[in-house]
Length: 421
Ligand code: PLP
Image (tube, rainbow, N blue to C red; front, side, top):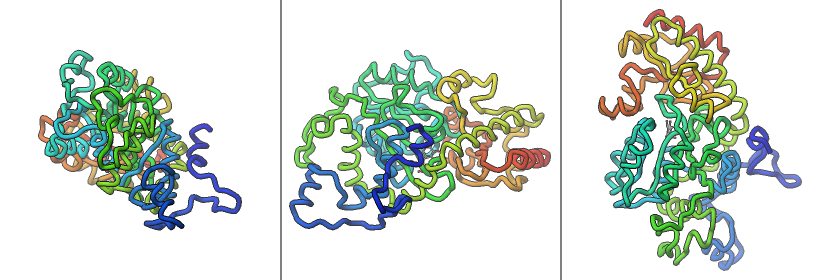
């Protein structure tokens, strides 16, 4: 099936007389006839549901759909995008290990990496994603366990050269983890360019309606975990009566381990009701992404010629430094997020945001309704000025998430607010 059809049909095929719409299995638990039946589930000898923290029919259907959309062997939903990033790392790194991340990532992920993982003994080096291979390789240590980057960076809207980072990681026996939140599999499928693990904040375009916080991790099944850097995959797991993940689950070793070890112990699961909302969003994802892209292109073209606008970062714009990468990785469009700054700096930016009428100020992005945010005073508030610069954020930068309203109304609101800025 093509992606539009997968969005509607993957993950749930009703049998004769069953509900046409994915049912919400609102139950924490599942009934079995014998202790042997339950023991087989606990031994992972049979697939089945026994407790919703680990798996649930509604959540499972959404996981199967997202795995199909990304072209992976399996997926696991989490309670938020933050939980997805945390579990994706903890599944392959432990105290004493090291990760290499690009520096211009979402502020919450930056904080998780720079502060919280550090407290757990995992060190993260941040690299400029435009650095040469040789400069990036200098950061690799014997304890390095993965590379991390965002397809489209939040909020600076730079494009990750996924193939280059994947080649660099693989040369050193390391996997590449890509946060594909802004692009979604409709605009870019990172596994096709060599990424090994993909994650999303489903809170953003996948849900798209600002209904449900969530995350997901998807496993390509392509990374070979049997090199010396990942003994947790190839040696018996004492917390799972001696199970060896690569032997028992082959290509699905990473995603099964994430579930049976980390979801079991940390419990950051998506709820059945939440998964239902995400599924509703996924059904129209291709339609929405196309419209978000077309509207954002019009907005970027308008802003770039406006006399009060200092700079616009939208990778599809002619002359944008990311244009060649956008043409390669995002041929259908660069999503609905446009970042820009005003010549009047931070104060003019504040006046502009306060003057908007239809477009709302929200700590959110990738919604059907257009919204704006000032990253330096909100999502990236905890960053120092130097860290802000590394993340590609100027103090006056405005992140505009272009929604699905009529483009004339969006442009009219921007015009009247710019006049007052
Ligand atoms: N990754 C990206 C690119 C994001 O933009 C966000 C949130 O804005 C996250 C991860 C974290 O997701 P959540 O807010 O669902 O925890």
